[in-house]
Length: 187
Image (cartoon, rainbow, N blue to C red; front, side, top):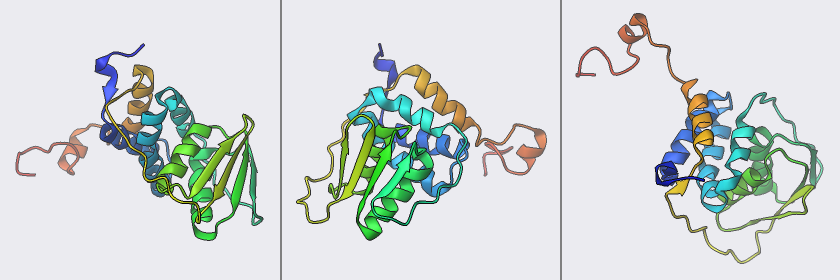
C-alpha cells in the first residue's frame, strides 16, 4: 500500500528515469525515449513500474533488427530493442511481433510516447506483443495524463540508486575541478 508521501509528479518521474537509465548504461537516445514513456506507464499502470526497473537492469547489449517485415524477436530486452523497433515502424511502417518481451507494459508506453496520436496499434495475447503501424487510422488523440501518481518506495529507491551512478564521487579534487555546488556562490 502506498501513502500520499509516495506520490510523485509525472515530471519528477520522467527526470529520475532519465538519470536512472543513463546510470544503468543505456545510450542517451534510449534513455530519453524510456524517460518520455515513464510518465505514460506510471499514469496508466503504476503497478507495472517494476517492469521499468527490470528493463533498466544491465546488460544492455546492442540489438540488430531483422530486415524482414514483420520484425520478429524472441525475448527482446525492451530497453535496447524497443526504441529501435519504434524508429523502424515510424520510418518504414510495417509491424513487429515480440515473443515474451521482458517489459511489455514499458513497450506499450514507449509506443504511446513515440506515436501519441495512436498510429502504432498494440495488442497482446499473453505470450506475444504485436505492434502495427496504422497511419490511416483516425487518431484517438494524445493520452490524458494526471498526476501525481503513487510510486512504491522500493521502485523509487531502485531508480535513485541507478541515478546515483551518474554522480561524480566526492573528493577535494572533484570540487576544485567544478563538481558539486562549488567552493563559492559565484559558480
